[in-house]
Image (cartoon, rainbow, N blue to C red; front, side, top):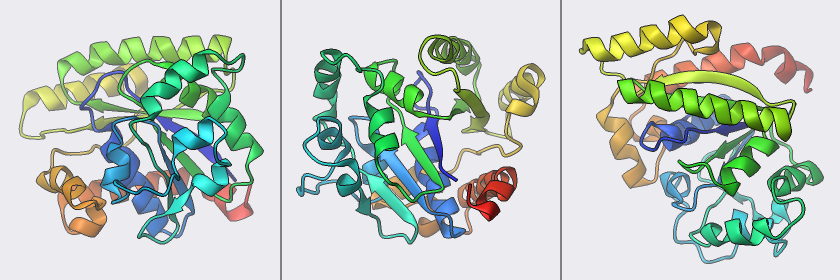
Length: 261
């Protein structure tokens, strides 16, 4: 199987990149081949896997502008089964370059489809805004995973994001589905966090993952060491939560993974 999943939220600071890095690492640890595409010019997913500062010209920007075939731009990480398509600040300029193309919304999709990629999951870490890059990611994806911070304003942002996803589904990518809504940065000591999780489950039902990601010092610290949390401190609450999320994915796609679809 090859499932392309965009991890997106128009609101920043909701645990989007944290989820991209740590879910990818946990699935890879389970023996699943995973590719993480860092599609955010800030490059936080790249640095979170220790891939920043490389000067070999292998990055997603050069793949987009046809300077390098996409498979040749993919690099290994220090983790078995986990590969990375790095970001670069130059990716910001790609938005202008893409706008001049007739296939501007489908460049990433076409690159992925044309390449022979042996990965069960391809995760795309999107920018925290609605840009041409985000639209490209949504057009390339089979589904969207939406991290939502457990606070009131996130509920308002979720409504706007769902409108965007429905618009892309209607006009550009009819097959796009919601992979799931993931509550993040939850402080179980506060009534507000509990209420937000309860409201999200009430409105979206089975679309909400069973796993809830807690606020965790280790999740905040791990990126500064260029490590996923399971490598930084596997006994932490943050590591446990992402391992549980990976288990949800493995249960959901067990049949496809076993049959190799």
